[in-house]
Structure formats: C-alpha cells, structure tokens
Image (tube, rainbow, N blue to C red):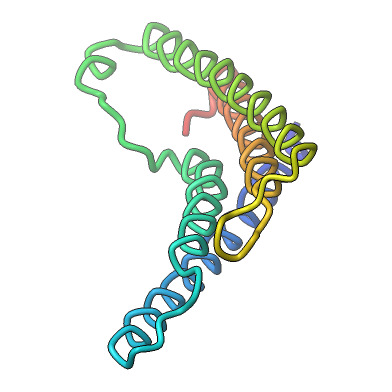
Length: 160
C-alpha cells in the first residue's frame, strides 16, 4: 500500500510543478502584455492564453493541495466530534468528493471528445480547447486517487 501512496504522491507533486511553471508563464505573459500595451504593442491573444493557463493552474494544483489538506476546511462542526465519529465524517466527505470528481472527470473527458470532434478553437489564436478539457478530466481522476489514499490512511489509523 505504501507503493500506492508514493506513486500517487509523486504524480500529484509532478502536477504541482506543472501548475507552478504554468503560473510563472501566466505572470510573464501578463507582464509582457501590460508593458506591450503601454508601448502600443499588446500581446496578441493574451486574454486567451491567460484563460487557458488559468485552467491548467487550478486543475493541476488541486490534487497536491488536497494531499496536503491545504483546502479551506470548515472544522467548527467536525472538531466537536471525537475519534470514530470524526473519522466517519472525514471519510463521508471524501467519498462525496470522489463521486463529485468522478462525475466532473467523466464530463470533462466527454467534453474534450466533443470539442475534438467538432474542432472547436479559440477566436484569436485558434488554439484547440480539447487538450484543456482533457487535462482537467485527468486532474479530476488523480484527485480521486488522492481521496482514496486519504480514506485508506484514515481507516489505517494514520491520520493526515
């Protein structure tokens, strides 16, 4: 089981690096666009590029953030429970998350397929939409693996 934990951790860490590098590229494009506008030569398609990159940053950062329990966590109710009740609540919310991310992943991949078949592209730069939708679908399925590993850790007595 520790091999599973390590593999899922490595995948989420790699995805976090992709998100970080993508965020740096977003900042560079924004900076170049602002300077370019001041000089009368804005970056063509900057809005499209930033939109695409923003989706990548958010999607690829979710699994690692979830692995670290870095999401906003409303614990005023859960902290009132002790021991097994708290574990049941934590497992229940993670199972609900698995269902949600499965549905999102399925629909993102379905959307990617439709966008690919229809040949949908962005207006200015003619960038295809389907790789972004497919990437977000993959991110959702990696998030499911993170949630599964979290449930296994809770039932194994190794809390995060």
